[in-house]
Length: 130
Image 1: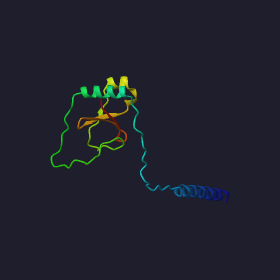
Image 2: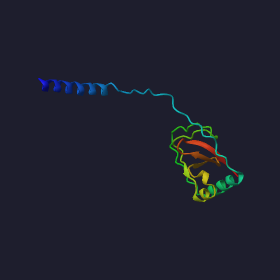
Image 3: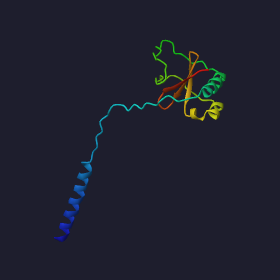
Image 4: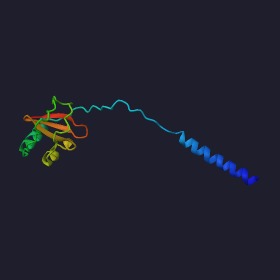
């Protein structure tokens, strides 16, 4: 009789533990996307000149444009996001050596304008010119 009581108690403990685990379901609702604003990078005129002059020296690779595909309409300015199909190039090592703060970024040249882009967010962080 004592064995039946222990078995019943053990069975009840196992069943209640399983029921407790089944009741701890967490449902997360998708919320609005988290938008983080990264202020534009602050560069001195000398740093801008170093970046621009070294990027202008880089060989330009022509982008291939797909015929018939509509070009995305983007207003290129600091804070804007670049389309996913835009090729971002790594910052030349000469520039990173002289201006280390730009090392995590990439750049693009569009219509003779040089833009620094945060590759993690595809956000333009600075326009660099002479």
